[in-house]
Image: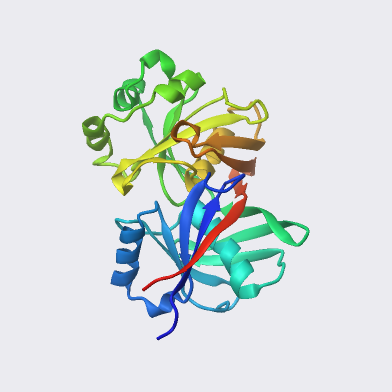
Length: 295
């Protein structure tokens, strides 16, 4: 029987055991869909990925992404973490870029190297879409914060680059830190929405070199709080440009996430709007933690 090899990586991590951990399986075609779902459930990371071929198919690498509860069409940190493993363990040489063929479509990833080792990986995300705009009281009661904590200069709005999120602008880092999901009100809010995750952010940060502090809650997916979320931050990047949060149609910023749960992460967001279209890129570092064999 062929060995069932997998790797554990930290994504958006500046050092080991920070960021968002991910399991990446080689030879994904040997698993049934039921097995992939069960493995993701047993590993119990926010996502687990399966590389479906040991070589590129055309110009891309087919990949599937599973949470413990379901398969996802797209997710940010699994895209970068899986691209890293494909470059390191399948291609085995520096490459400028790689395209992952996900359920949602093809997502390009570019590589920046230091001494021929991958440093920053950046993914091109789909153009964002925007949905419902919410009233302040709809979210402050879900998050257990005050009405005055929400920055009403900007909307509370659904945004998506493949996975929809509710984006909530807050005024202070203190407000971000005080957020605590009221489970009943959360499920009452999302039951009729495509958006199941809530991202809150503020311009105050733990480290002055960063531009925003972010928290993301996704109880529906079995993730009470995610330490780093590429897809949600991509949606945030689109939101920031659309709403001219920094008084410009172009951003290039650093976002810190996960500090409140002891998993400090760093994401690099760039986005620009031209002719009514928003181009979004999300980047970060990936660190290999371990290699194993699934029995």
